[in-house]
Image (cartoon, rainbow, N blue to C red; front, side):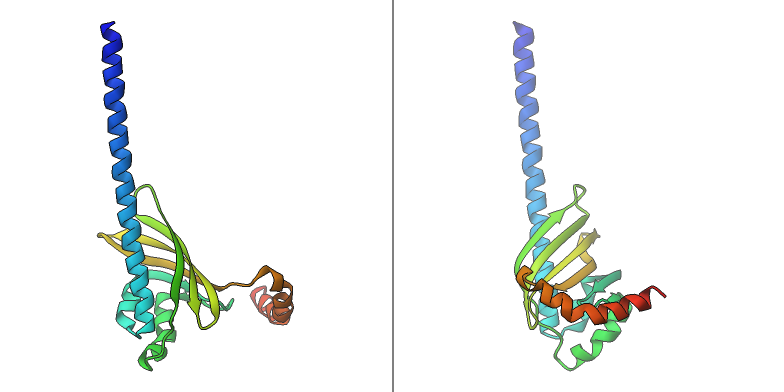
Length: 173
């Protein structure tokens, strides 16, 4: 009988410890998602306010920005050079997030996200990967794409067909 009581006490204690660990994990993931949301919102705001330094400070040194044109796969240095004239004129871009999903790795140092954006191009999708170093989240990769309603995909394919053919032939050389 004593062994059963000891076993029940042990199981109750073990279960309580596990629940406490899960609660702590959920709080940590929740606070990381909040920090990421805040960082990404500030990043988009920096572009809309033409704040070059704060915009690019949010990106890791080896980051990549992939834009809507198939030719646009920018490393950070090239993206800065391309973007600088827009920021200098006070007219960068204004992408307003309307919905965002964030996922955090189990070790809490990598995150990935997708977001729907209200832009001058209509609804776009952004997605990316972030890393956490010295308690700071940085964008490692960002991909911007134009969303196309499925009911119009055939029309878009026809519009793109010739340019895609030229682009692919250059890539295949």
